[in-house]
Image 1 (tube, one colour):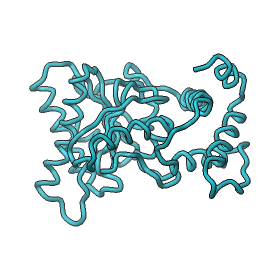
Image 2 (cartoon, helix red, strand yellow; image 1 turned 90 degrees about the vertical axis):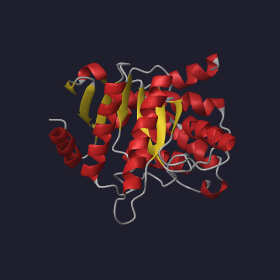
Image 3 (cartoon, one colour; image 1 turned 45 degrees about the vertical axis):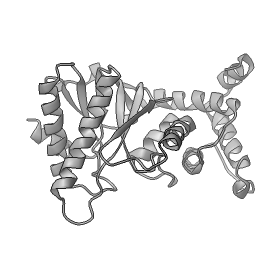
Length: 268
């Protein structure tokens, strides 16, 4: 980071940063150059997120990253960072927390990704994949793209990949692809969902991480029944913790009240 660039992003207000980022993203896209925009209200934030969501994984100017990082880190602080010590365990080594997973300052959060592993390209979509990439910044998609270019194939269901977290308060993001339910849930679907949790736990242990926060994998756009998914998640984590005394602490992160009630009942 250059001294001049650092000075610029420090002296800019959040509104000025927002305007700068939107202008940059519009100017690099020929189809959008005629757009008029305002960065003075919530519409500007939605526009920035949309522009980041649709942006392909390609090279980006260092000046953009300096301003983006300052902007996203300030937004992160404004949302409020949640530490593991702020949450009370419901069982030894297991926590339940309801809220925005992008606020959690743990070693790793888990992203429910799709098989392309590049994040969600639908502007301001409500999925967790979109939320995580939007809060992390464009570098997360770039790193995911490098992983996938090297792999030369779609990400298999039940496996996991690790990336940096960039502007998120956690240290890493673990990306896993859950099973998609079309009609009835099969035994193979249940096995693959359990694999998602186990793969993430193994990957976290391999990197000597101490804490990991799971979202409700496969229950959103992939239509896995919420209660059955929670049962599999809890059982897989409990089995892993019994077999591995590596003191890996697990947070079950839920966003919906209905999921909170399911996990609360299952965890006793």
